[in-house]
Length: 79
Image (cartoon, rainbow, N blue to C red):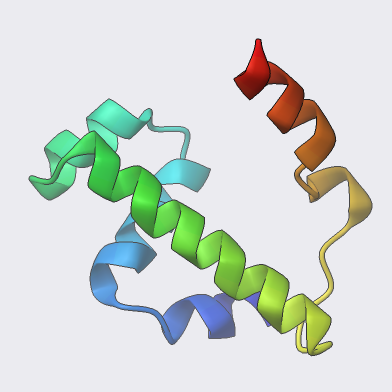
């Protein structure tokens, strides 16, 4: 199901997600795609939102260890 959902996304988003999984840093992905780091982060963030929406609709299951801990993330932002 994950790959099927990824395949529905624009080519640039697919590339960002695949390169992220391969371990490339945001700056490396931006360079490879001739884009900006901000655009890379934006595409990944939008895809994450898309995945969580699919999970709410029970089209995909996201294991608990992969969930973003929003409380911990917000604490880091406030520091």
